[in-house]
Amino acid sequence: MKLKIALLAGDGIGPEVIDQAVKVCDAIAQKFNHEIEWMPALTGAAAIDSVGEPYPDETHEICINADAVLFGAIGHPRFDNDPSAKVRPEQGLLKMRKKLGLFANVRPTFTFPSLIEKSPLKKERIEGTDLVFLRELTGGIYFGERGRKDDGNTAFDTCTYTRSEIQRLAKKGFELAMTRSKKLCCVDKANVLESSRLWRETVQAMEKDYPEVEVAYEFVDAVAMRLVQWPNSYDVLITENLFGDILTDEASVISGSMGLMPSASVGAEIGLYEPIHGSFPQATGKDIANPLATVLSAAMMFEMSFGLHEEGGLIRKVVDQSLAEGVVTEDLVEAGGKACKTSEVGDYLATKIV
Image (cartoon, rainbow, N blue to C red):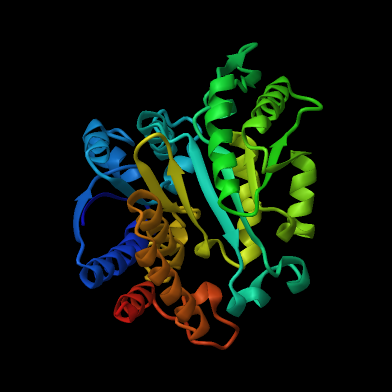
């Protein structure tokens, strides 16, 4: 099979972890007789420095002509520390999601048997955790009307949702639940927010179309609490943009490291695959960043965009092997242990794909 993949390394550690994912993908392509056409493009701070835009039109053209997008990370501290900056790297990510129609962020959270003691939560609370968040990406407070008034002393951000935006996200949630344990949780704040009441009534109206799915409705604050109490009680959760942004980061530490969790952003057509961590500027260029989340994102890409489940499964197998054998970066090494470089982990994974 010929696979056209847009390659957006981005900022910070993005290029380093993307390089390792490319090594693994190329090894998979060789083993399974696929042909990968890598299509590099600029985004984020790197694109601002080059052309003045965080998501240039040239990058968008490459993405829409690809079968899938593999993405590294976005962000740079010089923009974080400048509140007056008119153009920011993160604007490129929001623009990319909007223009590519990526309305659903798929974030799995699971545990690794060899790393379960690394979690900040007790083993008995997290053992068996295997949940998936579907976060709405193109609506809500991040895209609503915003501004200042009263001479800049009052600021406002508006959370707006349409029924159709909720329906398309919920449909993916119901469909995913049907492939798993047929449990779906809608996360909202319907006791306070009108937008959440629209979420709840929309999902309730869809229940009849999926009679086998058991649907629960929980307030976001209760879910935030239960995620650290009994995360293994959840399966598929759907929620709006801001709530999902916060809860998925909370859930990510269950595994023991943000450097382990992959994600996908999907829409009607193309899918974008990326690690959940940020650009980690403190580690840039040091060859110490954990590449496993990016590699596992590539596994999701093979499965979700190309239907290549054997290929994705093999990637997961060699990642598990690297963890079991201690071929890991410094974030996963016990005190006194020996850490591998980012590039060494990538080399190990690629050589194990046989």
